[in-house]
Length: 499
Image (tube, rainbow, N blue to C red; front, top):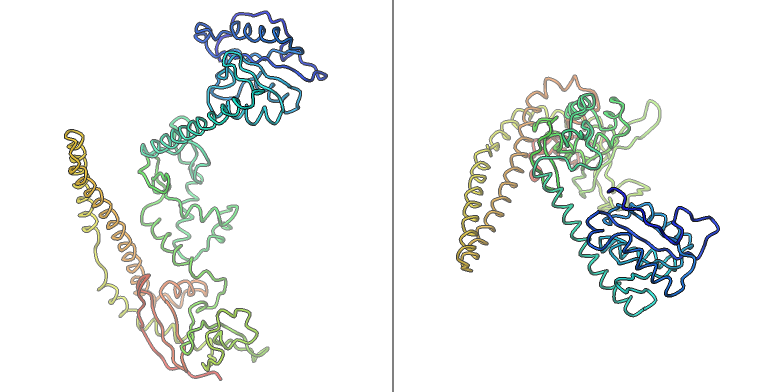
């Protein structure tokens, strides 16, 4: 806001003098934002003089002057204008007169909102003296509104583009967007205009990854142990790449200049665990829940209790044989003749198969492991060379204007995108390789630690390495996971039917 203009004597009361009884008000609205506007013929005296002459010429009564002296028209945060809008909502204003449209606002959107929404809802007329814009002239006024709508949309697009470019530029500079809630473990520092580490919360962030990567704690249990509000906080932390020192904008990652809290290794491991658990999240504590399949009809199998008291026994049955089955979609063959199996016997057999084959399976995995670092490095170098070539071709086209050069540049651009996709594929392979290495290590130590694990830990281990267990007419087959696309049959064992 600028220094006030020179004092002007009005022949009408100002908005500060309005009483509660006053209605049917004709409002003269005046605004000036800078001294230069006064010098350019937009001074309050010029505006008021034109409006007063109009009121006297048409004998307009009950006039009140609304003055915003030294306020920008880029927004509606002006005391007199806000008072005017309030009285319009109360339907105490019947006519608004101003010098020109740009006194109402300096953006097409603001002007359009005032004319099309505020005046229309208040059922009041509008007249701009200098522009001769009169809402009572319906035809020309309607055309004006249509034109303003077009320009307002252009204004809106320009503002959105400006905001987008501003936020993207911050991302390119490695800076947090500056708005919204910072990720847990950080706060927004106005001094450095970026994320700063909250030491106490940063300790909790690191602890979340440590507990989750141990595979012994669910997000809900972690939230309880660390005193967090819910498991949603834990999930949000585990998935947020900001902790890697990155800034995310529109799904793209950019190197950040803030301090990272988590290593790549810990973050990647957490993502692999999240992915593996997202498919088979089951509250059951039974060792083989969600892994059992009928070898006769292909349906899933379930745990079910038979008998009472000391005679109570846990068995495994095919869903196709389950009486009063509410899950009709799980039935594959109503006449399935597969056996009912003793659950304890099946669990012991599966564990024995896993332990017996652990060393051999570890060796099989190691044969499939490859080092992808050299491949990614080579592709990155290739992309760098292609981008250099693309820039050269673009400059040549700008200099010579030869369309054939532009066609060649497009081919190079297509090849760049192709190689970028190849890098993503290689990174995916690298992640699978890392997962396989972890499973190999898990299997190597499994025979020594199995007896020391509790029931939940045993279940987590089995789900991490077993794809499915198939039961067929007294025979058990165990398939272990190799990666997302392949499974390996590691053992068969005859079983006695429990029928």
